[in-house]
Amino acid sequence: MSDLKFIIKKIDSLKPVPQVANKVMAIARDPNSSMADLSKVIVYDAAVTANLLKVANSAYFGMSGKVNSVHQAIVYMGMSQVIDIVTLASSSEDLKSAQEGYDLDAGELWKYSISSALIARDLAEKKRAQDANLIFTAALLKDIGKVILSQYVGDSYKKINTLVAEKDFSFREAEKEVIGIDHAELGGMVAETWKFSPKMVEIIRNHHHPDESLESYPETAVVYLADTLCLMMGIGGGSDGLAYRFHQDVVKYLGLTERDFQEIMAGFGEKLEEVEALI
Image 1: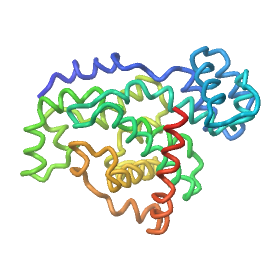
Image 2: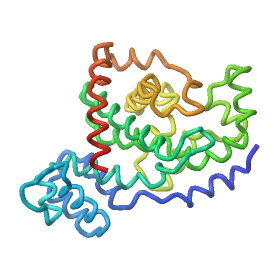
Image 3: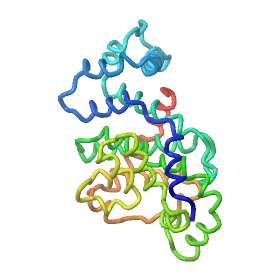
Image 4: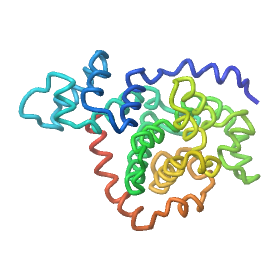
């Protein structure tokens, strides 16, 4: 078993989500927030401002005139899209590296995370969930623990795979047995370190076993189902993609139909292309 204290200490090696992104997430959760509130949070962070103006002035948006301020960008693009851009850009650096232990090349975990976030938001909108932005962000960051745990999974892959193949362990259960911690649990610790809300921490921590938090945090079910749909579409599975439990009760709990899933998957490709063009 690996030295857990050493693994946990490696949380400090991640590039943390900047404070401005945390504040933007808080604004997204506040139904009384305004464009002015969002502008005040962003305008004093030079890096975030520069990135936002770069995106606003890109060929994708095709503005007739130049966007020269954060306020202009929010007016032209809308609060929801600006929040998405800040959140996506703030989380990209850690997730874009290769995770060899999980057999994910550079950029694959990032694409998988974006895909999960887009599908989670579509599911949230179908369920008319109040915390659609929080669900989006939790789905985006749910696998941040893999960035740290990848090396240890790679070193212990034979033992992990033996438990999965011969003992009917899920991949998460095998990680926990061999390494002493699984990527979801470690992701929850990362979220705590970065001072995310308790709800966000629990969703990330329980995204592979939503039944343990359905009563307190039903949003976990949406993030779990988004992850499952990604794997069904062959996105970002890596070495662990087919070795997780499927919780049929979650589908029943959410009350979604096969048509709902078909509609979400049909529109997914276009939305992913839009995000990749933006970021």
